[in-house]
Length: 106
Image (cartoon, rainbow, N blue to C red):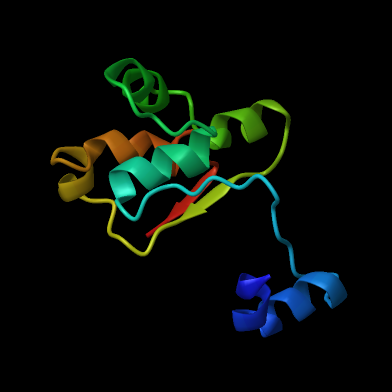
């Protein structure tokens, strides 16, 4: 009850605004992109080495799933998809951003 008192605006929107979604059993990704990206794009939140290998394997991104089902796919990135993302420490995210995508814009 104490929480509702301090978040009245949130609770009003939750009950009245049909465009405001609250997931009862939501699990957040991480503030760390390397954890959050696999969580968002694969539905997995890898906590173990085995989980990380699974989530980071090429072909796991939802782009592949949507393309396989015949949906048009596109990826828009605010980060340049240059060698810093294809060769550096961030390379594990590259396939998640562009894999299965018909159109890629950075």
